[in-house]
Image (cartoon, rainbow, N blue to C red; front, side, top):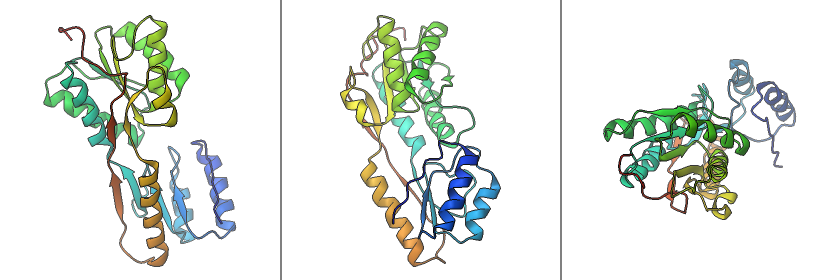
Length: 246
């Protein structure tokens, strides 16, 4: 039997759900830990010897199997792509401070800025939803009009950023290039279609299932860490820098 639990990134809600999960005697757990998950929650799963695979976020669960994304490599690819198009002032937009996945993505972005001697890092915090992306991009443009390329922490914030540009009379991919992350369903049908770093749900799901089933079959094997790569999908929100001074 399959259970789907949505903690809404709330550690207390997550704890209640996991306690109910344990009482139901399911065979194993695929788990995205909520941000700031307390140590007691990890201990709860360990003490009940629940076969567990974390994915996307690992937090402090270093003794659980983990399937993640090569986040540093992904944002390196995105930032290098914008630099190859002539962009020199590139910002990173989205996510909140001290989240592991965001920190990894920022690290990749900053590495390319340093390697290619580009403009200073401009990192703009924002919840990863469309309205927040709209507001954040509006503020970013006002504070840094020199920015011609934006790497986003997720597709929803990127779609919000594109909407902000449209409301300012600017065209994503022409006036400012925007790259998202995830390749959600809306990315391909947005106006204009969103350039993004794609993570295949099929590949991710197969990898998760394989790791969890192996853990259930062989509970004493060493902890396995597996990461999959993201692929750059070029659509219409990215293009050559129109201002050679950028």
